[in-house]
Image (cartoon, rainbow, N blue to C red; front, side, top):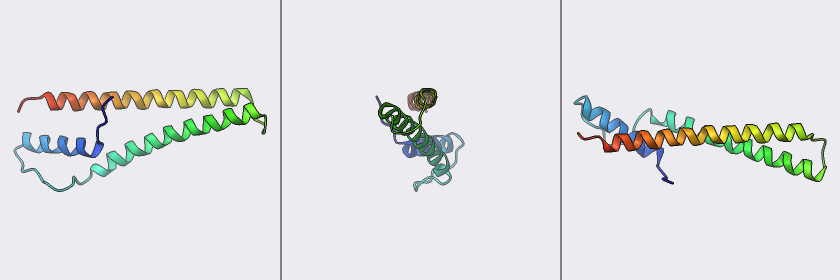
Length: 106
């Protein structure tokens, strides 16, 4: 599994875009790229939160310490599963786009 720094990916994409348009590339940190990276980070945190919530409901149901029904647990687990699968697909698309861009010849 590849670990790709989103900020570095955005910087490389902007550099390639600037080169393709014949504009000089800025060497400092990319401006405006924080929006995408913060959006992606927020989405990952939401996926993590949904998984933690599902686990806490599972534990509560197993110990019968609260009034948690099986249907609530199953719905929370499925929501966490679907959100994790969606995040995995987004990551796969980003990795694929990154690899496609890196294999382009200038």
